[in-house]
Each structure stands twice: as C-alpha cells, then as structure tokens.
Length: 237
Image 1: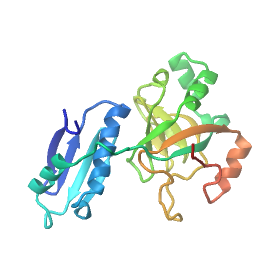
Image 2: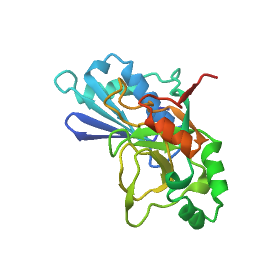
Image 3: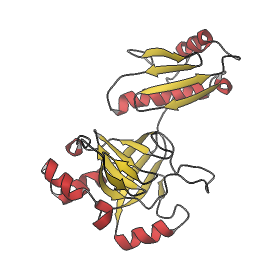
Image 4: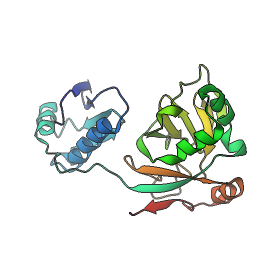
C-alpha cells in the first residue's frame, strides 16, 4: 500500500512532508516517485509543487486554493497501481585516472580493495538519481555497491573539482561546482551538472539511471571543453 508505514508531517502551513522511511533502497524510493507522479497527474496538480528525495516527498500547496484536508484526502484516494516510476537510462562518461581520481588510493587503503576492484564496482551497475540538493545540480545517486560504502570524513577535504564523482554514506554523487567536501573523490565527469545556458538546467531527471563508463584523460579534456552533452548516450533498449 502507498501509505503503509508512511508518516505525514505538516511542517509549515503550506508544506506537507510524506516520509516513507529512513533507509536507502529502491523499493522505498519507488514509492516516493510513484506518489510524486500520481500527484502531478491529479486534479489538484496545478496547486502543488513537489520535491522528491530518496525517502520522502515534500509537497508545497497553495493554501488559498486548497486546504490541508483536501490535500490529505486526495493523497489517500490516489491510485498508483499502474504507475511505473522508472526514468530514462543514460551512459555517462567518467574519468577515473590521475588528478580526476584524487582520493582513489586513500579509499583503496581504507576499504582494503584494489583500485582496479573499486573502478570495476563503480562501472558494474547503473546508479539511480535519487535527488538533487545541497547545491544546484548536485546529484545524489543510489545503488552503490555495498563494498564501496564508506563513512564521510571527520573534517572536509580541500575543494573537489566541478563534476567530481564521489562516495560517502552509502551513496555516490556528482558535483555541480567546486567546494570543500567530506566525500571521497574517485573520478570526474566532463558533463556539466548545472548550466544556465541549457534549456534544461540539469542534464538528468530524478529517477533516471546513470550507467557510468570510463574515458581517459585526453577524452575527458575534450568532452569537458564541449559546451553540449557530448559523450552522454541515451539507452533505448
């Protein structure tokens, strides 16, 4: 059931938070996306703004158009049985060599895994884009191999590069800007994760799957110099 074990919290007079749990997994996340999709297709959609995360959905509603009671009643009447929350699938280039992989050796030592094993695990399965947050275009990715789960640093490291592929706390991420971080930098994508020059400010939608593939330093530099989405491929099968 959609709201089995879910908790509804009115966190402001115009904002409802629906929390489905406190864990990281696709089943819980699929429930978040299904509710988001159903609300966006509902009769009250024009009065709402929604923000999905990996475990909850924040719903901001126009209190001058609908009441909290109407919103709550609509939620419990939604039919999500035929909703497929899956997004699009993409192949996304990443460089896992040299300066792009600033913390790879450190992670290798901490996890007692070879660098080759870490790279292989990063590329083996798609990562799902759970949410954007923290900074515009900063992408949180689920589905990370459990062998790569590592705690955040006790204190932030020096600024990582724009486009950094990082891991921490059971998640992976792709950064949109350079900033200090407690995450570990394993690689870098040439794809700009946020751009005011594009019609779509971010290159991928929440719920999309990103299959990372490796490129060398020369190819990385060429793709990074491009102003479009060169190197990104949509998977159609």
